[in-house]
Image (cartoon, rainbow, N blue to C red; front, top):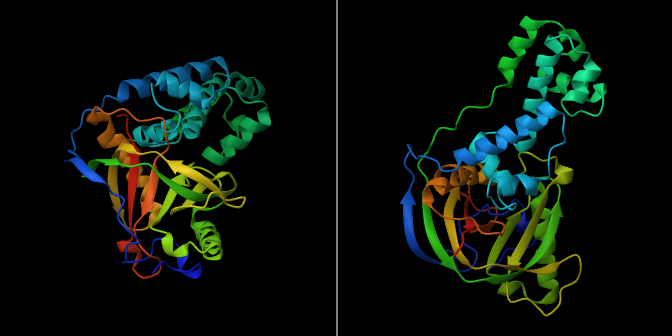
Length: 320
């Protein structure tokens, strides 16, 4: 039996799988090796070099789509690939590069205003605010202070590469399917409300007993975005009526080849596993990412199991 709205709280907390498994027919499987040589590194390095040049020129950062094209990556996946490959968000990379250059200029005697404008900040106040938030000091205190600036530069080094961990990945073929979706905005932990509203509609429409999967389409990374900017499509897979009331909408999840990895544990860890999929498995796989978002398949009924036992499949779309 499909759970009611109250049971959908903290989606996936359960042993019992909801409906049939959408894992598809496995065509291959692989277990990652720790010494994978990445074909992604030169592309990421090229973008990083371009960003460094822009900072040196005081230019604004280009749109994400432009950087994605430079890296020969889909805009759907670029921000995830960047974080997975570098260990930091694109925004953090830009901040680090700007502060590093500003430190050099300040140590050489530049004014705070000139240093701010030279690295792309609109005002000295904006630079000062970022200095305080990131380094705990004001830029004015560092003007002409070479030793202090050099010490702070050491705190602005890029993060080290993540330690590779074994990751079991399957290549699967899935059929396209339709879902009824609700765009959720807010904290990742509040998704139970979106799923609850979806299930309430399904009960009212008399189709609750036809739900056979809970699907999620993340449109941002909850680790990097403030809650007000985070978007997530919560969805139910079922034969939907011809029309659904707004703000619900029908959404088609594309079929075809996917890389699938199963996450077991707290759902807040889904992004970490996605990082490993993109940083460890994908660069060495020879596969091309499709121009489509990844999706999650939550396999379990809520509130019946310990957090450590929760299961969800991550499905990354690949070119055919």
